[in-house]
Image (cartoon, rainbow, N blue to C red; front, side, top):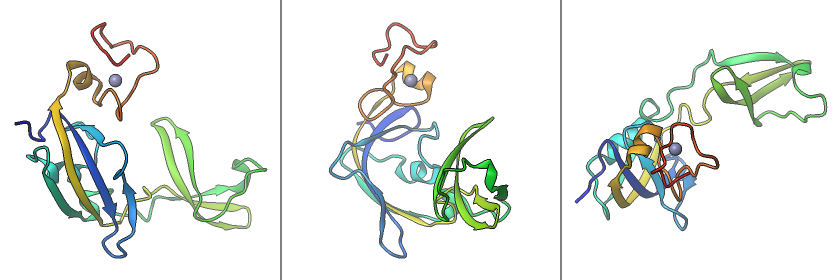
Length: 176
Ligand code: ZN
């Protein structure tokens, strides 16, 4: 019987809550199981570690401190940006989450505060500094295809469904 280990594709149903408040921050219960390719950083590391060795039908619950989830908040991850760097017609309010494009790809940031013509933005991950609790049920586990292993993600329903044929995708790849 397949269990969750590196190089497998696992399908899970999960609910994530903040242990302090019990508030649900994410769940796919009632929807499609979430697939992930194990060992390819599709999921936060702590999540994978806690699910290793689990078989289909198995349920696990665990709590991840920030060091095993999205890291601690970094007080130096704030930046002051002149208001005129933002589109003039854009409404900006503290708490808003925005995306920008950097050399390293898309980055998310939150508006922390606005003082006069200066906008203070927070580049910490929205979940940084938070302890997270997960209830997870394993729906199924299967071998990954060679294409999935070379792409580093799951193909098919719930995974990546390539719109266009990827350059490194062989003819045998059913995903493209
Ligand atoms: Zn792919």
